[in-house]
Length: 218
Length: 266
Image 1 (cartoon, rainbow over the protein chains, first blue to last red):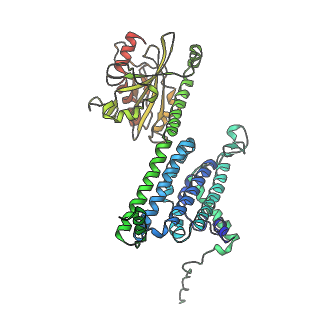
Image 2: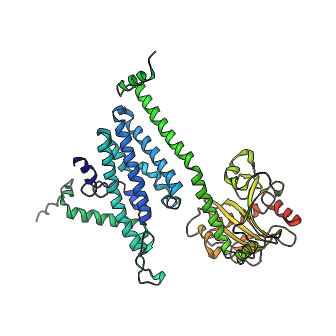
Image 3: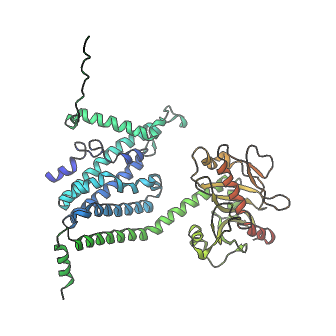
């Protein structure tokens, strides 16, 4: 049961995107449609699980002085392999994801979990932690992707849901949803919604607001 | 002599901050990562290549659909795709002995053995090197050429423009020009891919009565059958297309080949 916690905790309570605010760059770029968001989610979850397993398996033999380089090398190799697989088996989508699969290397989430968890824990909990964080990231990506595709193009997974005016329906697509800023807005609203529900997530302000002392009266 | 296993155990038992172990681990990790990446790359290459080839073929097919009456001609001839043949650009004749299906034009243009350095004064398309062989796509019926498609490329404003130029049977009338790859400014130079601009090309003539190549992309309004309107605000992209056509229809491009084809037929 305690092992399962590694998977469930990062879904919402400790979500990497909405609580730790990691992996935002790709969350903006690949969420214009559900298909790209799903592909990116699968790719990142696979890299996260595999890198956690490998790093955790050799954690006792990684010299502290070069540990970040070793971790990055392993993550980068896995990312290249995933990218090659996408080009071979999902060519059209890999074209739309362009460089963002390659940029998983620089996703703070992957290195963060490797350095923060896999370096100090046995293989099984590390893989489950990777899986949980991958799923937490996927969940947010899919929610943002669904909202953006539905409001931006009236479709879900390319299937027409709201008939657009171009097709003779009533729905006027919101051009803003196709652009990156809309992902910021949706992400912001999500963070707000989650923190209103789980007030535990609210952080104490770093600095108290100081009000100016009242001007001395003459 | 210590067995390799014992040596390996001793290596692992060294303290982590030991210099030998640090170097050893770094080497081993890099080696395994390189092995993994190259294995995946080599094993998946054929599949990826097939996708790239299919994407290019689809682009060619889309262009064929824009040519009026071509599909009917193909039905008449009983074929569903154009024939691919390799042309030797030096001699202007068809090359034999090489399977066009395995020929990779981009790799050939990089390899010194299969390409030539272009003299700077002739290199108006900014290519630097050009492969000695080039694929062409053609449709014939009863030994008579109906349409021929020439792949062309040249430097645009900030990217290489790659296109298919389709010529009618007289080898002087343009049937279509389709840009299938470019990375110029969206909204300006990138408008060369728009159907409205592609629609300006059919019917234009390449060479005048004396046989000189005069096809031009001009500023403002085109007035003769040898001119096509440039794109306002994208002078350098328009010039790029202009130079690309002048190069590939000239002596260093398909010029000799088109001459031979006109004189001798297929």
